Image 1 (cartoon, rainbow, N blue to C red):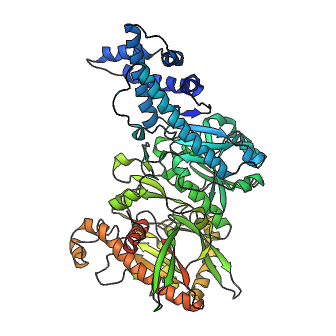
Image 2 (tube, one colour):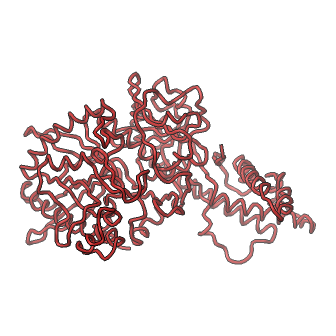
Amino acid sequence: MEQILEIRDGCSTPEQLLKSRAFSRYLNIYKKEFVDELGAREGRQRPEAQHRAAMFKDLSAREVLAILEGQNPPTAEGLERARSVVRFLDGAFHHYRSSGYKRLVRLQNDVVSTGEETPETVKDKVTGKARSLADLILETRRALLAKVDLEHGVRRTPGLDPSPNVTAGEISGHYLNLPGDYVELSHVPLTIAADILTGVDYSTPSNKRAEPFYELDHNPFDSTRFEPDEWVSVPLQVGSSMIVAYLHKARGTIEMEPGLLNLFPFARIADIKAGRRPDGIFIFGDPNANPKDLGYWWDAANEVLVGMVPNRDSLKYFGYCKKPILTLHNVLAIRKGEIPLHCGCTRYLLRFDEQGEPYIIEMRVKADDMGRVVLTRGADGIARPIFYGTETGAFACLDGFSEQAKIQMLGREVGYNKETGSNARQIVPVTDENEVFRGDALDVLLYMNNFTLIPQGTCTIDTDMSVEQAIEHFRLGERVAAGSTSTHRGAKESSYWANPFPLLKDNDGTILHADLFDKFSITEAGFIGDLRALVSRGEIKVGVAHSQLMAGVYSENSDADLAQCGYANRHEVEMKAPERLAEDLIDLIKTRAKAKRVRQGGLAEVSITVALIGDSRTGKSETAEKMEGLLSLNLV
C-alpha cells in the first residue's frame, strides 16, 4: 500500500513540528520514493543518481532538528551538508504540497458524548487547524532556509499552499449503530466534519466506467480480513438514506475522499446519536475483494444494503464511487415505493411585474444528477410527485462547458484526470442541503433527447403528447454517448428510464433485477395514472426536451441535416444547441408560472420545479449553464 500521511500531532512551533511523528513518517515516505526513483535510473547518469540517493538514505529527523537549533556557525563542510539537506527537504516540501496525500485528523467525540460541540463548531476548529498547520509548515521551511543562508529574494507564500488534502474532525466509529455482523467496521473512526483542499486535480488509474454495478448473490464483505487501520469512513446523507462510505487508505483509492466530501452532505449527527442504523454500507478499494464482488447485496437479516468496489486499477475512478452510492440510494428508494430519477432538477422562483408578466429571480438546484419522487396523496385522492435531491455538488464533465463556466468553478473544485482531455471532470458545489432535502411538487417533467436535430424556428420542447407516449421515451432512455463509459463516442445507447443505476431492463427486453423491476413497475403504474389526472388538470407538463448536444457527433445526422437546422459545422451544434433549449425552457417556465399563479389565487411569487431526465451528456448541466447566462443570474 503506497502510504499516505495521516497527521494526528498537535504542533505550534517549528521545533515541535520537526519532533513530531508525522514529520518522521513523511520524511521516511519521501526518502523511500526518492531513493527508489534514483535507484531505478539507467544510463550515463546512473553514478550521479546513486551518489545522490546515498547522500540522503540515512537522513533523520534528528539531523534536521539539529540544523534548525544550531547556534554556532558550522564548518564549511558542515554548512555545505546542511544546505544539501535543506535543499533536499525543499524538494520534500514541494512533493508534500503537490504529490503527497495528507490527512490532518482531530478527534471530536464531544459532539456525541457531551453535546458541548456541534458539527458547526467542529467545522470551525477543523478549518483553523488546517490553516495553522499550513502556516507552521511554511514558517518551518523559511526558518530552515534562513539557517543555511538560502532564504533570499521574494517570498511566494500564497502560491505555496501546503494545506492538507483533507482536515477531518472524527468521532469513534463505535457511535455508529452497526449490525453485529459488521462490528469490524466500528473500529474505523467516522468523519463528521471536514475542510478540503480545493483547486487540486487528482490523477486516477482509470477515467471512465466500463463495468456495471449490479446485484450480487452473496455478501461481498469479509469481516475476517478487514483491517480497520487501513480505512477512513464518511457517513453520508444521500436523499433519505444514511450510507456510510469506507475508503481504503491506499493511493489510487483515498483520492476519492475529497471528491465525496465535495459532492454529498454529511449524515446527520442527531441520527447517529439517536442510534439510527445505516441504510447502506459502501466499501471502496477493498484489497481482499475479488472481481466477482463488484456490486451490491441486500442483507435481509440485518436490513442493510452492502456495496463493494474491489481494489483494481480499472475501478479506480471517481465514477465508481459516485454511481455505486447513487445505486444504493436508488435500490433503497425503489424498495420503499419511490421512483428514482436520473435527472437534473431545478426550482425556479418567479415574480410578476405590474402587467402580470413573470420574471425569474432565482434558480435553485435540487439535483444535478439524481433524485427521487415520493408519490404523496392529497385530499383529492391524487398522488403528486414530490421531488427530493441527493447531492449538493456536481460531478461535471468539462468537455461541454464554456470558459466562463470553468472560471466560476475555480476555488471550489476538486478535479480528476485533467490531463486526459476527454472526460476530465471536476466536482463543484452547486446547491445547499436545505434545497436538496426540501420536497417540491414537479411542475415539468421532460426526457432529454441529445441526438435529434430540431430545425431553426421550431420549439425544442414537445409536450403535445400523451402521458403514455412520454413514458415510452423515459422507458427507452435513448442517448448518444460522449465516451465517458464503455460506449463509443457518437454511438447510440439506451437504458431503462435513462437510469442504469441499477439497470432494470436490458436493451433486448430482458428483465434484470426481477424483484426490483416488479416493485418499480407497480409504483410506475400508479404514477402514470396520477400523471394523467395532473396533466388533464394543468398541474404538470410531461414530454421531451431536445438539447441536440451530441447531434453533431451522431453518425445518423448528415452534414446536410445540420445545415438545414442552421448549424455551420458539427462542433457548432454542441456549443449553440443547448442555448436554444434554454430559451425555450425559460418560455415554458414563465407560461407554467402564470397558470400556477391563477390556480393558487394570485400569489406574488411562485416556484416552478423542472426535472430533466437523462444520462450523462444529455445536456442537463449544459442547458442549466446556458440558462444562467441568458438570465444573467451570475456575474463573472
